[in-house]
Length: 267
Image (cartoon, rainbow, N blue to C red; front, top):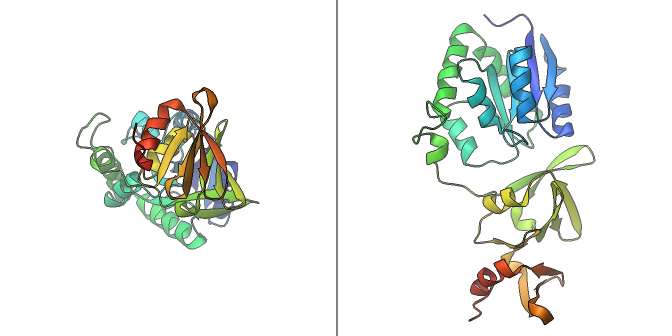
């Protein structure tokens, strides 16, 4: 039977994302938020201590990813889970194949309500058993399994990135991004005359953006290749790249060769 009161844990490193889920849960009858976590390490601890019935679990977090949280807890002990992600990528496809619920940011109220309704159904004894089988399927049966659908699926590159603006979440198509600049643990997405800040590493963005369209030209800079205009060779071996909008960015020596190949510059 479904518990009389569903105890929910919300796990997300973004405060606004946690707040939105908690606000939506406040309208769900018979539901109480028993706690929250801001990273994967906290998530493991609070799942074990609070023993919630349902977890909203962010996929990409500091410390441990959502997948790593499930693996550490173990599918047999894992509560009913709704994965949350800003990236509609290959991992999400694996969840979908395995019929594990997920929400892609930014999600609307109707999508949230549908996922939550399914979670209620799965909290029955039969449903929870089925969910654990599905979690095991997503994980490939074991953390090291070479047949895991996540490991086997070819990577799919980002088509959009969710950003928070004045308390709202907006989805930015990647083909609107001119360049990306690192700012500590954050990244600044520059789209025309606008700047959007997200909490993501440059390495992660480099891995998730299609290399046919984006190139990391410096440890702190990713540019959209169809905006590249001119490569300037400066004194002392320094290089700068000029974009079609006039923006000039530094090019590291280690990245120069790949950029010259793309530009068709012979050595």
